[in-house]
Length: 447
Image (cartoon, rainbow, N blue to C red):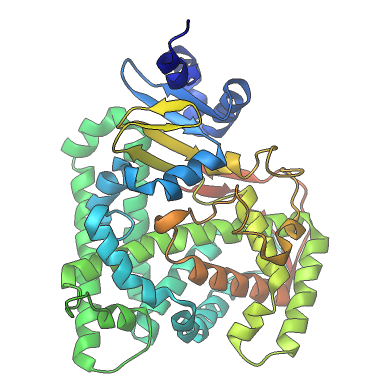
């Protein structure tokens, strides 16, 4: 009789030899390799990276929801965020765990309630309109740098409103992106870890982030000394109080601001770029967005009313994030042994949930490769069991409403002014820490 324990622990394994044979392709783009493994091994498989080094990949949405929501207390983020990223951005919401995370989430959550975000929309819209003047019509341009600047400017203005000048914003953006690029090198080239450490590269980038902290401390001090309210995110963070009535200490406040810069700009710029790429390939959808914009604009006199009137545009964004989720993997490590649907996971297992595979799983989506915004009609997005654009459970992205407001405004601002000329070549991707667009060359003409 078979040992039931051995049966339940059995997870299909991809050998280290297969991994090494595909190593050069994996460095460039690991997604085709993982897709082949999912097709041949099933929705959950183990990848052997070395003698005792394994990663478990899963595209099972039920398992993902179990780890992220139903049994989330037994799962923590991996060291990529809790250690590697932390050295550049500190102990904020994105990189903290346990009691610190719970305390900070409880403290900061009210600042991201929809009613509070409505106070920021005028500032967000002005930042968007300013950056979109960089679109040049009637010639091919790479749209990603424009959206990258737009997303960073939007976060900066939402935090500091009008008192932060462009020179400071550009410096903060440079430092943020340099730190992220350094982290990518560390993760993609672990065999160079000695060089990064002893060659001074890590030290150089940590010093850059210390410069950013100094800039932010000065901005915070100027706000406090001015005794003038701006009703921006900084005021909301300064107003926040713990249960004992105390405010955040300066270092913790700076950590949270740095996290907002990191988490609030790259994923948004990725999503916006992929959306415009899709609209270029679907001119009929583009025209529906324009018609909805014109109708919503004519029937409301405030920004939040306008956003609520752009339901189809919201569906377009949701479908774009289904096909090209910026956070295309979610990592977790289990504290204790666990079991899910007949498979056992020893404590300390490295789990990677492939969000891009879940979003295209043929068992959960009809015509999964097809761009079809109508699949998200009637607010179907966050209700779908296989949809995780902002994560799930208690650690779901705190800025999801802010991001959706910003993206709807950005897309409608583009489409009201320009028509994106048709394009039929495949959309190119660059999977790094987030799923980034590659060669997003589009051409615009004035309407």
